[in-house]
Image 1 (cartoon, rainbow, N blue to C red):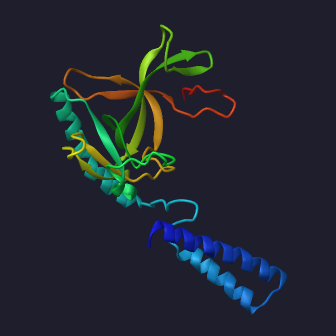
Image 2 (image 1 turned 90 degrees about the horizontal axis):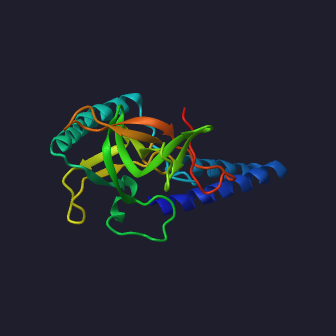
Image 3 (image 1 turned 60 degrees about the horizontal axis):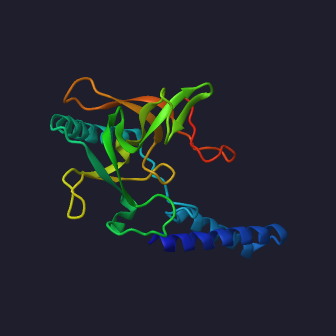
Amino acid sequence: MSFFRNSVVQGGSWIAFIGCGLWTYYEPGFEPAIGLILGAVGIASNPVPFFGKKARNLTPEEKIALRDKWRPTFKDFFLQAARDKYRTDVIVHEVARVDDYPNINEKEKGISSWFRVGFMGTYDRGVLLGLRWTYANQEEKGWKEYTSAPPDTAIKVMLLGAVPYEAIESFNPDGDDYYNKPHLYCHFDFGGEPYERVFYGQRNQLFEDSPSYFTEIAEFTKPGLFEGIKWRFWKR
């Protein structure tokens, strides 16, 4: 059943459930009770929630299996890339909307079904995607980002999205006819995004030809309603 059809079914089920619930409250009887039960069954049996996509619920065993599957794959990829002095971007695809590629829907709201970002390395439980280079300066109230005209004391950092191994469905390191870059197919399990967290990191390298790693500088947080147009973040 399609997402649209499921949404219609669940929407109708909610209407029936609420309407029959009010009917049962004001005029108790057999007929409104049946409608109430049928509405509840429609809501419970619908595989796609009315207010969004159904989130995956992996068991600990499934998470371990996926981490063991992907960890050596990406470790080898970044080791070889460092030896070859090869830095690359990656095309990230959402599994649920895989057929959207390579088309672009300019009217679509929210995160795109596929996009290009930096492929930066790994962390203890997944891969790091580079969202943008920027500058950060430690000030009296914490760390502050400067997208332009940074002070002399600012350091160059990367805004990083951490994608856990269990969110990865497939990896194509060779590219395709549209983009000769690696392709990463992910489940957007975290509020419609593939990142379990986003933070600012400073790039380091142990020795020449070794993979880069990132030291976390600060957690990334979106600004509040009255914080102006600049992004701010505070060191934990």
